[in-house]
Amino acid sequence: MASEGCGCGRRGFLDRRATLAGFVCVALGATAARAEAALSPAQAVDESFMRLALAEAAKADFPFGAVIVRDGRIAATGRNMGVRKNDPTAHGEMVAIHDFLARHPADRLKGATIYTTGEPCPMCMGAILWCGFGRLVYAASIAELSTRIGQIMTTSEQLAQATPFEKIEITGGVLAKDALALFR
Image 1 (cartoon, rainbow, N blue to C red):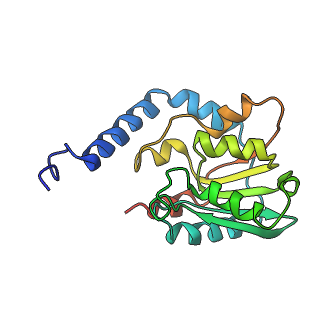
Image 2 (cartoon, rainbow, N blue to C red):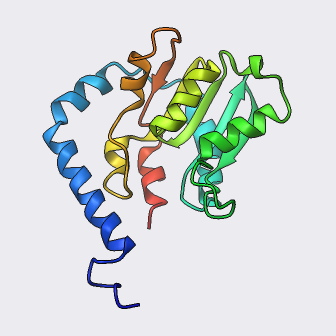
């Protein structure tokens, strides 16, 4: 293809966009540091559930996976299926939520924990808040992901703070290096 290698095609556009996003993150570093300081510490079980989310991500169209945990048990899993389903909204979190809802009533999401290999985008974080999850645990942050793939530079913490009707505990950075390693 003529556009390969010249930075003109879609891949070149995404590479330039990821680079630009990285520069923006550096420029806004103080803001990101304040937001991350508000995150809750990891719990003992977080790594084991995150490893399951990483296993889902390894099978995904793009390396994003999610696991929903209710009462200490896995209630649903999901992985990015955007290409397979020809659906740009089929992110790991959305697929996991739909998997859960296919087998459980919606009110069972209240207070559940969702583990995801990447900090949720605004679409997914909105769904997480609307579903009433009690806790979100993610591996790689938006800032970290933006060095590998294009991201909307709005953090889950920012969206949670803008949602006064729902409270959610957020923990970030659990096995982040493992999640980032999936982007080859």
